[in-house]
Figure (cartoon, rainbow, N blue to C red):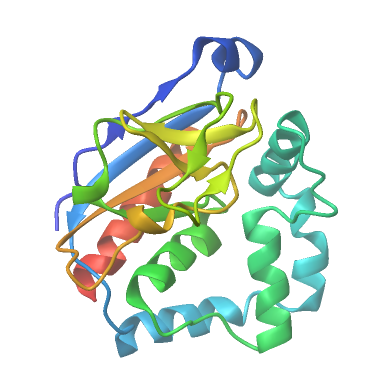
Length: 215
């Protein structure tokens, strides 16, 4: 499979001035929820062998994970309380003895994270209105629709499209935007912390897309 076209996201000017190298990008690929195939489970199993106890304890000192720890602090999250994605994955591996969840989309995103240190998320492409970007939540905004939608604290950094917030950055995703049984196209997006080289950031998206193409 040739690499899918990468679409750069937008960054709110105030946020861009504060975090100049912050980046969001996405790719759109065919696919939807299904079980993880044996090949993907095997790859995750091999990666799990590299995440022994010593690696889990030291990973925060590696360049890419360290950049996300700095970003967490910039946006008001304590990485020692709210673990960065790669640190959370390492802890789960130690607790569960492995990586695979059984859901192909989740496991493809996990594979990309473990391979590169860069987190990737998946949305139903048909439920996204316009390009994704990063901005501060506005007063009165909510994550999702309906009576069970969560209120957002004004100023919290969110991933948003033309219709409103899609997800809290490094937090919950709006349920109505997630892939479902009728999903036929996935929008994969990644957020690059300042200081993370483009090769890791872009490889995360392409790694996830390739894993789904093989699933």
